[in-house]
Length: 472
Image: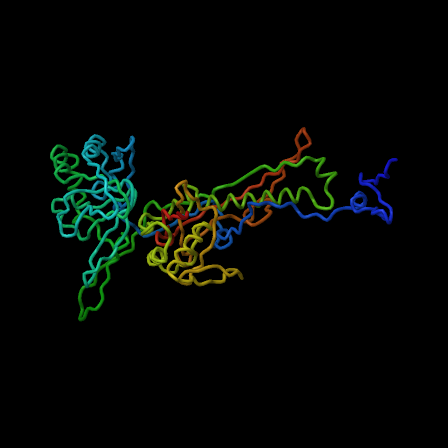
């Protein structure tokens, strides 16, 4: 005897035998329409950076940052190459040493590079001691070192942290090197290249061009500058009587930096059959466009952080890049970041870096405050909001960076650059232009956004580098 079969393939049972007495929901769905969501996408983030940067209209497509004349003192970082465990400084990179800035004799630089001696230090070992003669130039090839000074009552103070590419002991290349003002101690295992003063003088005696360069670069001949390296403005104060006042003027950079708007683009393709037949209950073209714009905005924020030309991680001044004292981001590290600028408005960090900072606060029994940003409560340190940004990369070694910035033209801060009023503008600074229908009946739209970012003065942006975010 066969059993009755329902329209959904299930058995029909009669009352008393456990069967259904009415139409099943599975069968009823064949006659009903469903309630649908719009298409969802996982990589949509809060994009705090795009929302909070003050955007400046760049009608000409280029933004020029005019600054006071600044004298470059050669405070850059040195690069190295290695073969196995043997590390060697790249000769041309020696031009980052202040007294060698602008010197271009490749043969002499090669001779200097060959005279560097490689040393390995373990954590806690002294590399140079305060009060001793500065008898060598030190290049930090790998690892971290602390500059240690003495406090008023004899206690040790960490004056600063140096890491990969930093250098110290430049005085060893001068006629009167003097003594170390601080002790240099390895904070981690370090590889250090040292150029003894005697080796430098040997090369100096053989090179007329190097002697001429050092003579022309003597500090006594340098123009007067303030502590930021800007041309000094002569002023007088506290005088009495009728002294002759110094004349002065404010000098400007002759070749100021210009930021051209960058572009992020894509071509959205939608088949006419889809647009014609499957356009209810929601507009297919509109939904395709919405998700494309979201992806484009995500790429825009990524470029503002990582682009090598204008991205914030690459445009921070070298003096505004600091290293963590121990590895993980601590309250001390964030305080150091804040101390280097006025009016800090926002921290930006990868969510894992924020979690790592929270762990350090927990270990110290501290509870970070909170701040309200656009109606939303976010963590804060010293009243400065700490905002998540997953575009800040995490390296394979588990390190990341934390950015702090002052924003706005009026505050000489960081600003975003864009251009509004574009043809076929869909959102401010973003256009959607119809490109026609091809021979395969595909509709094409060009989706474009133009943008960049500018740092108006160096101390508007700071970066805490090599932040350990993985727990051991």
